[in-house]
Each structure stands twice: as structure tokens, then as C-alpha cells.
Length: 333
Image 1 (cartoon, rainbow, N blue to C red):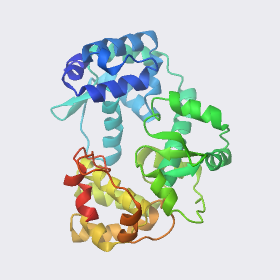
Image 2: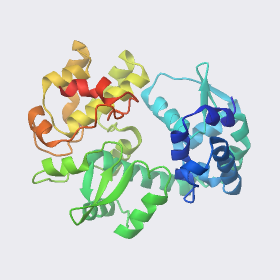
Image 3: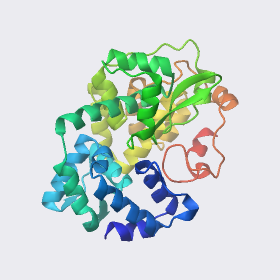
């Protein structure tokens, strides 16, 4: 299938959201068709092929290089492989069919032009910066912008608030994952993947910023997990033996939310584990290795009193694509 065919059959909202990420002067939603979006995307790539590079991590760039040589890649079972290809699909750089991934035919020349412009050293440094920003948002969910700048400084990354905000707003890999917002006359760095920053702030008391190494933050930014911890790596290996990559992805999203709010409710954890005893027992061992956004224990009743959960017909918080009432809402009752 060509990219054009795929875009013409996709939800316009999704295609337009991507178009906005790569074009700061995107036309109004009502005034542009999916066909127009497709042609604009191709034109943007031809005028500036490096847009493709800015959409990718170094691992994803390597995948595209391999696909240019081998044309297709069979699907793997691993969680990391799954995440990388999901990002490439999210950015409309690869498609899949018959258990294979491939670069669509009408995009191949654009990808080739991008690869010819690749400066590996420069993009490796950019990849680290982006991974750190995403990692901080996943570890803390919400932080005063001054605290974020101090953390970055510890990693020898120097920004002021204005330049960091501009970087976030113009970097297509992160503009839909993090944001700087004004809340009660203060500027906060917040996650757009796991929302509720206002609720995190209400529940957070005497918050002490946990310390992570640069490598650990990068791992969180790339994979949502600290794979530099042997116990976490063992846990992921366990999941890969028993679950398919999509199930692992959805399970980890639920677990991140559970640990982030420090719920400490075995009944909820058991439901997250789909009442599978072995999975529940292994997960119990690992919850303390996931970041806690509020750093204080809360019962589900305390959280219910203070958190405004999505409307039952809204998309679910875990990213499954289901309505909230048909997914995680069942776990909060």
C-alpha cells in the first residue's frame, strides 16, 4: 500500500494531528482534505528531507536504513522492537501488512534523501536531548520548570525557560508528549502522555525530586522503563515470554499510572494483571521500581475524592484506544 492510500483511508483527525506536528503553518482543519494533507507532507519532505530525521530516534533511523536495503522486515515479538515500529507508524514512515513492515513506495525517495543528509553525531546528541526531556516527563509527570532546568543542568544540558519552551513547541518528536503550562501563577513542565498534572500537584506534598542517572532517564524516555536495573530487565523478559507486545504496552501503561499515583491497592493491581496469579506475583515484586509522581501513599478512595477522571465516553487514559468506560474505568470502581 502507498502512503497516499493509507492516509486517504485513515481518520482525518489523526492525519491532521501529524500534519500539524511537522508544519507550524498548517492550514485550518476544515479547509484541508486528507488528499491535500498527503501532498503537503510529501512537499515538505522534498523541500526539507531532514524533517524525517527529526521525527526519529537513532534506533528508528537505523531501522529505516535497513528497510531501504531489505525492503521489508518481519514483525518481532519483543517489546522494544514493537515500540520503535509503533513510533515509525505513528509518524507515517512505515506501514505494515502480512506480518511485515515496509516503507511505502511513494515515500522511499524522501527517506533516501533524508539518509543522505544524516549527521550521525549531531542526531545522536539530539536523540539524547529528546529522550531526556521525555524521560523527565515520564518519571515526574509534573515539575516546576525551574526544577526541570536544574535537572537538565546536572546532565550538562543548559536551557533557560524561554528556549526550552521554544524547543519543545518546535520539536515534532516531543511536542505531543510534553508541554509547559501556566498553573496558579507558576510555570510547570507537564506530561501529555499521562495527564492529570493538576491532580498530581494537589496530591503531592513535601515532594522531593528523586535522583536518576542520565542513562536511566534516557531509558525511561525511550522505553518507559529503567532497563539499567536488572530486576526491571528480568521483569520485561518475563512479560515477553507470556504476553504479546501490544498487551505488554497496555499493561505497562496501566502499571505506570498505578505506580505514579502510589495507589497501593492489591485489588486494583490484581485487576491490572487480569487476575493472573503468576503475573500478579511477579508484578508485586517490581512496583517499587516504577516512578511515583506524588511520593505519598494514597488509597483509591482518597484518589477518587480528588482526581477528576475522564468522562466515561472519553478515550481511555492507558492509550488502548477504547472508551474509558470499557477499559480502565472498570479498575477504578
